[in-house]
Amino acid sequence: MNTLMVSNIKELNELHQQIEGKLRSTVQDAIRAGEILTQAKGGLPHGGFLTWIERNCVFARNTAFRYMQVFKYKDKCS
Image 1 (spheres, rainbow, N blue to C red):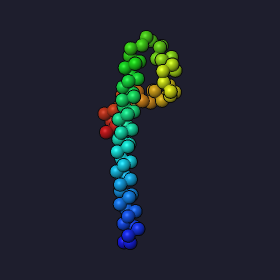
Image 2 (cartoon, helix red, strand yellow):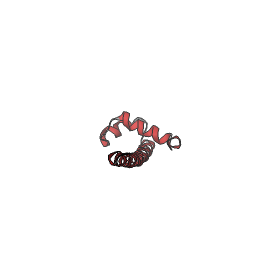
Image 3 (cartoon, helix red, strand yellow):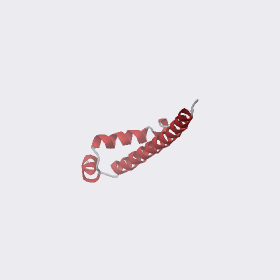
Image 4 (tube, rainbow, N blue to C red):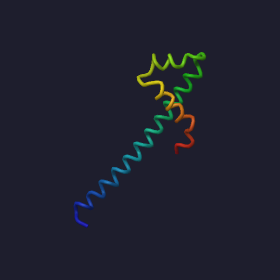
């Protein structure tokens, strides 16, 4: 193998390791976001959660529900 190819292989493997770490971190962040949202929903009266999301979150309610699903199924995200 030439030097360029060896260098590219090393860079490729390093990039892969960085991506794996970022993906793991992103999933952990999504789980935590879902946990916070689930706790918030539990502390609100019936029907108050959607208004709470609109007033407090910079993301849509669909995103909030996706985060909550990730939290709910966190044991399958390992």
